[in-house]
Image (tube, rainbow, N blue to C red):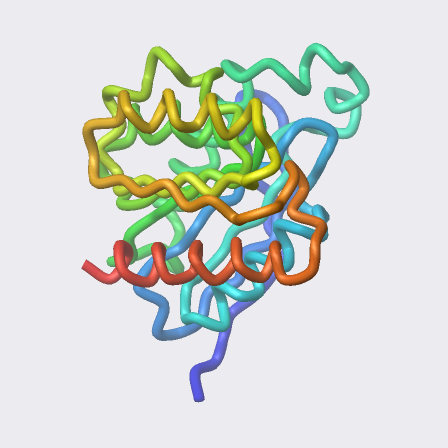
Length: 213
């Protein structure tokens, strides 16, 4: 049975400090950084559920706040994808310097606007091995899609019609290894029975496969 190191961490990012939770099973092939959507935080119950399933599959996780409490009050800041991308890149650079990340590959899991930040950051980080977007506002990363080299999985609800169409358009632009997984009947928040579980399982399988290389 594998053991796991876990702890609260503080991540320096452009003059601010972001709080996070880093948990890495001893035999983890890689670590996934979570980029949450607008109005959410590292305490997001959906992302925490997905992170737990990833760890059950042996993958490490870093959940952290992309914004400080003061910044998160401003709706405009919540949708500042340039800033969110900078914060994710800063957290990635910080994690690379940690002992827990030594010889481990990195991945991104992004939700809604956080998925746009994940794709933009992946386009600037050729060593990031895999990206999963859950209900992603991938249109907000349109100018970066062609530069993404990481294996990329889009997971979208079948009843999230507008976002599904945006994901289909973005999927066609991607030139990396890619897959589009539609959770039938699900809306944007995957609140129906078994829907979030399906998201977590396909994400865990994707990361387990692509971080193991």
